[in-house]
Image (cartoon, rainbow, N blue to C red; front, top):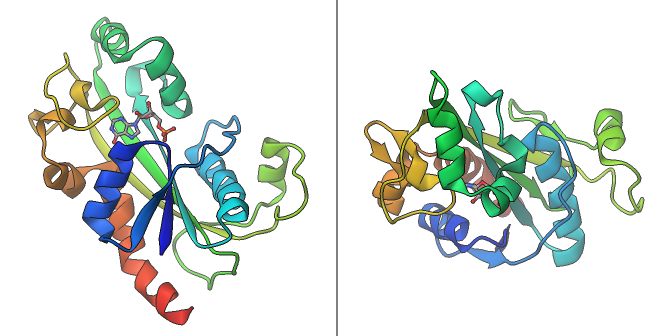
Length: 210
Ligand code: IMP
């Protein structure tokens, strides 16, 4: 059984829809380090979650990156959703000439073992990340983590739709907001769907080898 690490049931719905019943939510709130990139945040979270779960984990870190706001709110998307709210983010973007944005998702997989060389990025907690993450407790800083990334581009619009979660009502892709899509429709085009597709292609070999 693979633990999908998130406190967000919306993400789990999408993951189960993609990966099937071999995945279960692990409601574990790992410490989020500060970084401009999602990769190191997810990698660090995967190491912490692996220590906690003592089994294979997949951490999902995602965010909204608005072109006109130099990528804001990016890694701070969750904090901004809770404090500012998505309606005010939309108002902020509406005042700009450019409304394009991207959703990004990084899935970080850790099962305590190493990985063969592959085109997908592997985070080995190198010096750069160690500097970014600050002191670790030393117990698993060297645990390898494999990263799977997905991106979808769209534009910020006035809120529409009741589905999805988070920023979905203000993110339009191909004429529909993500909140106007079914889970299947969203997965077919979304940042998470794209990252999950890469993971789902790689994972069977890994789980067979266990
Ligand atoms: P986190 O990855 O759980 O930290 O999520 C970061 C923020 O982005 C939260 O405010 C989420 O609601 C939001 N978010 C993550 N994925 C999505 C998505 O697929 N649609 C809309 N908002 C999302």
